[in-house]
Length: 426
Ligand code: ATP
Ligand code: MG
Image (cartoon, rainbow, N blue to C red; front, side, top):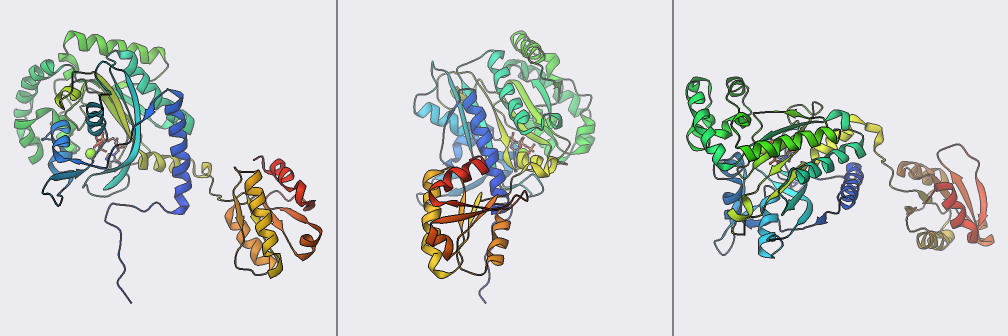
């Protein structure tokens, strides 16, 4: 037998048993962004490697060790996108969407990072994200946070996620704080791991983002950036905090929240959960006022977030197993005997024409009624239509409810669509 070929480690197939849940999640996300007036942007999955180096930052986990980078046949260095923000800014600059304009954009799609696969962490994963441009006040920071909060509400998981926020201040304030942090960390160098020691020199704020428990213990009492903010950033942060409270959004200020990407300034935030084990961050974002200019555009303020869709789906299936509708048909059309096949096709096609929202599965492959009804049951259909030669002759159909123990009934072909629509609410 030929050797089977398997998927790449950390890159998952989305099988029929869960793809319905993904479709439901995607449709709720689309509905939420539409309700806030956001527009979709779709960018390529492959970009120039430079784009990510210049935006995410050379001394970050993503650029140092997680990118899928390769040379194409022309010898250009290309990278499978590890995140969506850099591409949005690149596209915005390239097509003149940003300068002197306001944009509220969203995207959804696969991202790629070469990480150690585990629950909630994969090498191909999906992000849903929003990016806003041209707005610099705390009002838009609040809006993107409210938008994310509405997503939890619509999925009924708002009790299971908590908002953490922090401010990274201006570049200048961060530069000054850097010195303070470095001397604190140098005094505790013996408690730092290899990565953190290297970063102490190149990008000390990254040490605060370490996932190593020993390093985390060493930094609990580190001087906080939030106490070293410039005045404008402090005012921006205070205004955001009071607006969040006014909007009824609970939050916690986490002074060690710095995010794993270099482009952030001022507001940063994460939504975290206790329900997923180690991979607890479901959504993360913040302000990146310098990025547009850094990538060659004119200075444009910006704020956004990205949500890990696998983690969202995991959270949903963990928290409410039964909330997921696993049916894939509403009506199952059976046909007894070879000569009724054409009648079954006529019935099915006419229902699809008259009830475009109904999911109609027509039995193929023959067999007795028992076998056909067994299949009908597996699809989750609410009703089965029974067609035999007698029904064909009298142009009638027997409707058999499958779920609620109701009696079966016979209706004429012409009255079928209306009767079925009433029964199923489609
Ligand atoms: P983490 O700290 O979990 O590594 P991150 O800071 O690298 O996350 P971001 O770059 O901010 O993550 O991405 C935003 C969101 O995308 C994360 O909060 C998470 O929900 C999701 N995400 C990131 N990396 C992965 C991955 N490898 N697999 C699945 N989801 C991921
Ligand atoms: Mg990461």
